[in-house]
Image (cartoon, rainbow, N blue to C red):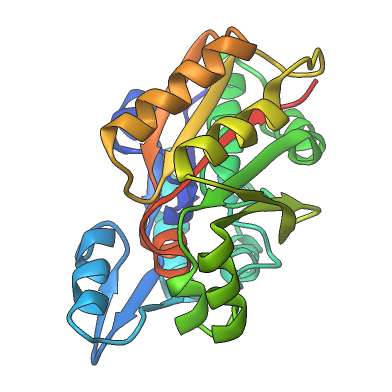
Length: 280
């Protein structure tokens, strides 16, 4: 059967994986100053960082709109036997609701709520592609993906909280205390929502080591096919440290390093990194 797997741009898979698995990407919208851009097409995270560093306000993001979905799904529905689209968690964006509305009259277009974001969503996208390539039918793929969403382990550690302060998600007092104590919070996705899992203290490198140990050490409930290292812009030595820490605790078939897109980066700022995998 001819099939197409698509996702919104928050899946943070990176160009190489998108091309390898032939994933169709629908961009969210990014408002920066007076202009609106398409995530990953007209604007990149470093453009946002430069704007903020120059004294500009934070970027805001908007869902893929209904017209975009209708146009894309209608075209793909005519070309393929089935289409499976994977969205960012419906708790984070109305992209999923818009996609469902657009697919309502297209019986061969299926929409999946990943209950996640960034490469946590990316895991669901790649698992959809793998199952479709193996010849599985769309209804069975969707059923398996919906069960899989609860097993995705997605978290990040933040090097700084300045963007959180600017967005109102972190007070100036909390920011001052975190800076004085060198606290680095770990943000975790559970049940489609984000929350603080733990706070680490010390240099960012030391906190990163402790964070990865907490996520991976001594565990036998992890699927070892693939793990993502996803970051919003960190030095090469931090990525190398993350790789070495992962190798210390688990042996994965594939370690994928991806750069977070505008949606994640506009909220957390530079210096954020996470390890994202699937539990058994």
